[in-house]
Image (cartoon, rainbow, N blue to C red):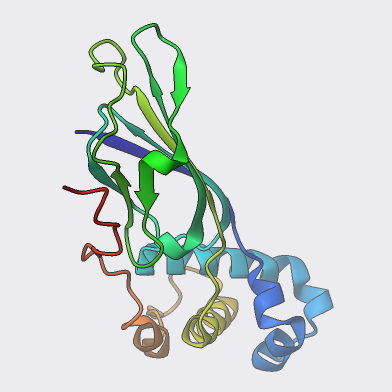
Length: 202
């Protein structure tokens, strides 16, 4: 089985999460006078943390495209953030068929999201013609910033604010406090199993 996964997520507003007052106090600036620059730094900080931690923070939609209909498959998203999961496939006539939600179970906790088809479910198509005949669409809720992530983002924004060039008279490495605060928060790719009704898997 092959799978493609695509997300369309709106990045969160880190300025709102930190608050302008906290940014002003930490950077010792008038936020209104520096708002455009600091907002750009906050957006970059979110992207940097996403890369370092393996998460996407934003809310929106996601789709997975599979070349077959397995009895069980996973979606690379935290189960707590997914909702309104819809499974469709292409039948032998080329028509799109929406699978009855009662024919599959979606896990509610852990990573990744696990979709288990009912034991008696049989799609009409043999999937011999269409490269990616199965599509799974879902809504994705935003991931909230933890206190450690907020503090780490404040440190990295301040670091970039004070060191505006990539290379100065000396190299300015990423602050150790940033790395320390995020060290234990990286996404675990250990597969979480369980919470699948017994009648679905026989």
